[in-house]
Image (cartoon, rainbow, N blue to C red; front, side, top):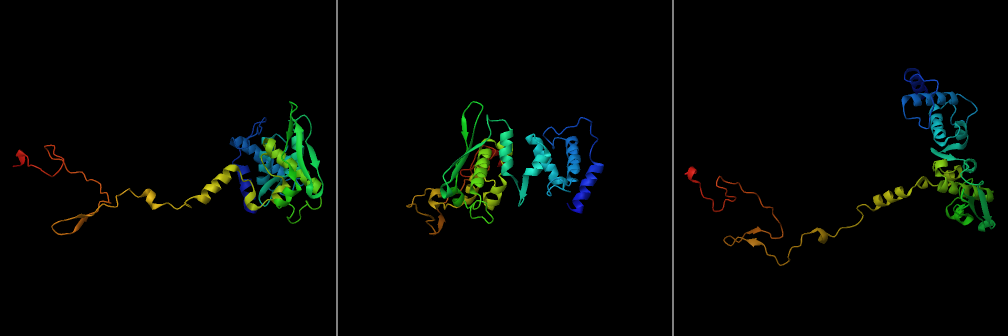
Length: 281
């Protein structure tokens, strides 16, 4: 943390944090009021001073505050979040082990997440499944080695798909299952392995994002036929010519708006046929 950030945090803690009652709690929302935020900042500063938390949080109350907020919303401990939330190129990601653990610990299903593995080598495929409280089997998307190759996961530098494919295919099946059925538990965040493997333009692309991108790409890309917007004017129309001079004085294809004529005291609306009123004689 920079000296400027440290000074700002210390000044805020010293001058702006209100006194806290003995029973102050976060209650899931750190931003609801200054009292709750003050409590969160005090907790963040205490945790950031520890040397047993991951290095991304040591001496960094700002990062620790985010971990506190996520832990409060998920109903888990801040330490658990800090140990399993990794920031890769500015992108938050969960460890795959944590995704499996949080699903199993939720007690949402009758039993722990299981994996159906078929085939070997390049023909290997896997999906995660479990059973809900009503006895219905819940299956996640099928992940195959062919998919891993087509998506470019295997070709990434340092990819574990080449050396431990059975582990990686289970991890990917679990993360897909989690985002599909347990997005509230993992907050829709990708796994650590996925963030390593995703291209820059693939991260967090929702259906709405794709729709907006398509609209922006196609905007003003279609040529408009001038005939579609030009008034329908007869091709046989002839220009208006002054018979005395032979000068063209009008074009029937151009519509000129009528100009209002001044009204006179007798109620006449045009100058044509205007007759001077008696009082003006």
